[in-house]
Image (cartoon, rainbow, N blue to C red):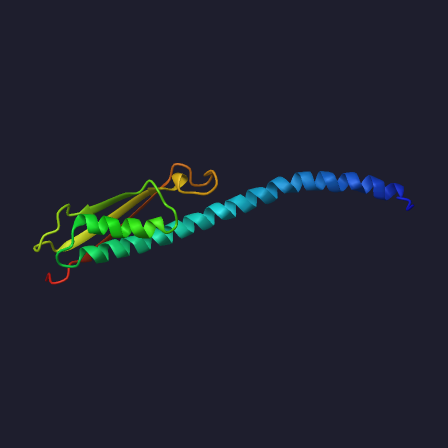
Length: 135
């Protein structure tokens, strides 16, 4: 049987205290990194959805529901919910010159972990494109 020295036995308690003090900090940094990565992914996906929605709207004969559907399909690829998609003008006609798509998305309702840094924040982006065939 091995003999544990008295100093080694005292050191076991120090390791336990050090771990107790640092484990909370490690979890904080892990969840903070997870939250910031998710927000970055959401931001890039919203930018892509804006482009796809506006691109669908500048084609002659497009409708507002097609624009919203195209943008919503892109946003669903990463599991986003509670999305507000506005298209201006509300009716697309042959004389419509520009199409604007606006996406508003509450961040705290679309994160994996409970929101800490982005609680109550909303991502609000707009993209305007000129319709094809308009001068």
